Length: 133
Length: 107
Length: 259
Image (cartoon, rainbow over all chains, first blue to last red):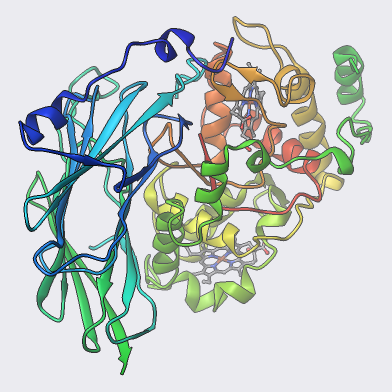
């Protein structure tokens, strides 16, 4: 049995609908927001993720929130992180659940309305069904 | 009973960003699982986590069932005065819990 | 490689001292953690964010909680676990002469619970028993496993080995077939390890919880579609003893993280 479900890898460019809905027709910048997640997840139940936006941030342009979206989860908005007080270093880590191989997306919203986005593809290996526990 | 672990550096310098970590024991029940008898288990996830630093809200998370069981959250806070970080969270069932940690700020 | 099961049964019948020959020499032993992805290994090694630490901490709190008819805590008799419990897990399962039976660490803790605290024993896989076991076992982190398999433990050891080599279930496989002949190979999305007990209790992503060695062993039975032995059954205890002997010298890593 190969490790990677090849069919899943060959899928056409997926779109993260929930991210599109959130962003609407606002412009989005790519390239600055960092979204770190393993390319291959051991188990969709627990997948470590790290999101960072390198500073510095001009006064009035601090990070207010980071939304984390899933393409395939039944609840597409996995989490929102808010930064009510200005912080110099924006970096959050958590662990997400992923219902299958998919693309995930993060969007950082700055106080001046600027949006920074990043996406990442994750292959979620099926659980060995030899285990009924 | 709060069942969580919190980690902050024992000492930080004023103005410095320091990392805060919290690991909470919670099933983060998705609402999609069944009991052995085939009955659905109600969704129950932490729906809000806040962190206040000397009374000021510095971080707030709104997780969903997309966050793993026994969730981990790490983030950065800018050091102001010595004092306390207070974490509070509430789940869908309305259960509230909290945990605190103190931080010493060197000028 | 194929050891005659018949010869073993014969050995059992004569209550002979089991031949303690090793098919996995010390130099070839590999902890289950060495088969993990870098992410999972990092999760296990992260002393803060390893989710199993939630159970270790729970156990550490329970250590000081008074309970039972005499209102005594583990700490009242055992003091600081860092000193009194260091190295203990490395010797379990062990034959208990007073109880005249083989006890794994969970069984030993529950025995103290019942007889020394005179409190109701904890249920298998309860948060309390997993917590205390993880707390006690983590005091031996880094120490090598070394169980006694002679004297009254000998028949348990021989039975454990027999069970390890016996084909079971609809898949008609023995532990040996997966964990010795196919260690390092993939089974669907899993990498089969050598099947060592040195990181238990573990936090398993599949369970989204901590779990005991017995739970893991039951999962293997279920995997080959065999009838599940009951918790604390002779089969699971004897197998645990054999596994601990087979892993002799491996350092304890509790709480492990597994897929």
